[in-house]
Length: 168
Image (cartoon, rainbow, N blue to C red):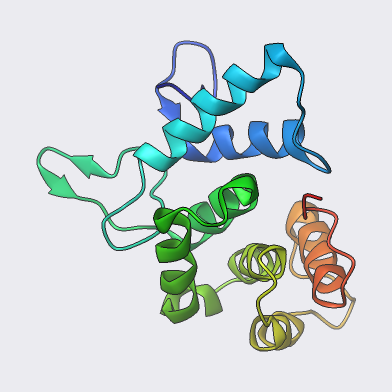
């Protein structure tokens, strides 16, 4: 199966496929006949590319015969995109791996996505929300990138129970 590329002629990647699925599925997974197959293929693409250690890399889970490591941000994005597959073992493995990942504490971006993903699955987000607030600058931002600040604010809203990324 295939996902979406970043640009025409590019390899299909997990991250843009996750973004596309979020745009199509949130707040509700569409039930239109013409969308069911598209979603099935895109979901399948992400699930097929799950890394052995739980979660997702940007593209392939294996390259030149070697297992690739999962990345925290990509894993969290894929989890948000695949909320309609909650019981799949690859989803559960990714959630377990996300909980124990040391990498999530390094940036506001990763903490925001982890908070959103974990809250989307009904998990406790106290630790990640607290770490995220610790990265907030005195001017209220989460650094010079407006997208990171916006996503961080949405993550804190999610922690408080208003998760705009959660599917119904």
